[in-house]
Image (tube, rainbow, N blue to C red; front, side, top):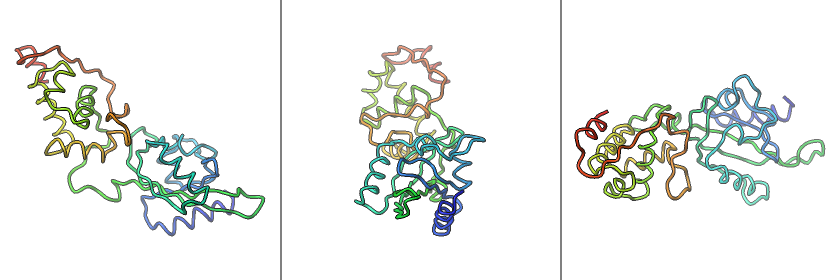
Length: 239
């Protein structure tokens, strides 16, 4: 690692004073010039070096356009630093809510990039654990529960969801109850709030959307129930 890059990372490490924060030095095109070992372990491909790769290829942040805008404002001098909350993907594919803080470094030496960035990546739930239990990091929703969560976040009532998904009202009540238990939420408003805090709803998207990496691959068969569940639909709902 070049002395300037090593100094930048070491200096930033001393100022953060946290074992949870990973640090990375980027060129003006957001390509990794240097990174600490924590960043390489958590966000780089297993066994592969992050050096020379684009930041977004490693973090896969959602939404990426928010970070693009923040780095542009650093480059033009319209701001000295920023902190943006995004959802990143770790190298095991598990989504992780993070705060990304960026600062700009300007160099007068013609042998060095004129503009580069120092970036700190802070996992939110590791530093600020929630007061109520958090679902396991690998918690995934069924395709049906993802559609129900999107509908609730969009303001749909259970009757509207039943018509939209071709389920009975009692069937929707059952699945909403399962979602409340899965996310440990006491009511529908808390369900949406907790889903947002875990990154289960895409930031800045309307209508609300559950990213694919929060939906498990197994397909869920939606029975064509329209009225009060009969014996067959009741058996399906009890699964």
